[in-house]
Length: 266
Image 1 (cartoon, rainbow, N blue to C red):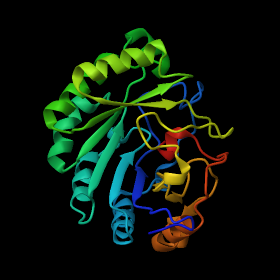
Image 2 (image 1 turned 90 degrees about the vertical axis):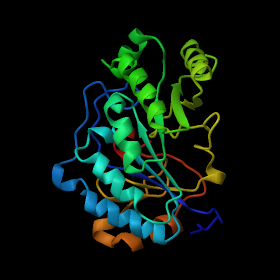
Image 3 (image 1 turned 180 degrees about the horizontal axis):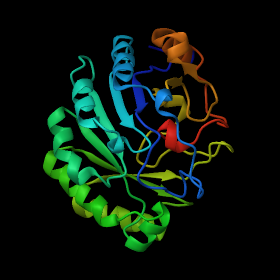
């Protein structure tokens, strides 16, 4: 598939839930968020139907996100079903790592290719502060489990405030260099204000090279993280929604006033 700016669209990011077991300061407001109702969340069968048709239309890279995807019941079986879809060349998952110690081996056995893990600091106190109560040691155990399971290359997503030379970022970089991990630095974004930059050591935020669509947990195909455009698969049908999102994908991001990172998948 190609959009009107001749960008090849071959990447689908799939949010399977808006739930998360952390409350990171840059993702969720301190007072919490209003969760989607159960009836609004796509079933696994609906998501699989979207992925199958998207692959038939030209998608060959799929990434599972959330919220935190590992909190959704039945995630390993679902991963196995996605892995069985012919035509997917790159199949990944993004996680905060808290549950990865338990899930790394089953995910790899189910057919997941690789994994991205969020890690913004190596200081346990700072980690608790940023995540509002998270335990850094669980993430480190999850990284070790992912290594043992062969979910390589493991990519670390590190959110930074101003510079990748910040103390927390330097500590994460040193850890990654010592343990053979790839690290990407993501400048903290603001959807409503349209604040984003190109990811350091990655391709996110580079509008002219953008190759992705997003499926939200409640069934909207979104062509751009920084846009309010969305197309409801339940109302329009899957094929029409994908075609509309591809055909109307903006040249570059502007602002998004209708979503939060916890429900759109980042």
